[in-house]
Length: 127
Figure (spheres, rainbow, N blue to C red):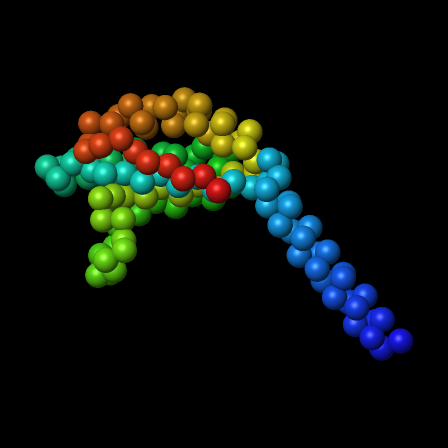
């Protein structure tokens, strides 16, 4: 009887783990959107201030449930993505919310106003 209880317990735990894995592949699950930016070296302090002000406007887009943005920190890690200077990270409740974020007029305007500071095209990673 004790062995059956242990087997039952292991089956339940395994089923719960399998269920969580499949839900992470669900199209309606939350989605994180990372944007890596390479900035021009010739930015003045006024340019940097304007750039940050524009990026911070993205916080006001309500389809993003989380928002973070930061310059890259130099930690001496040789594996770091050294080609990129800035990252924007947003979290959305689902892929539809991410699409709405990407097409939001504020988002499109921020892209237009900050494009002149880019040394190359942005790179994204969604998960």
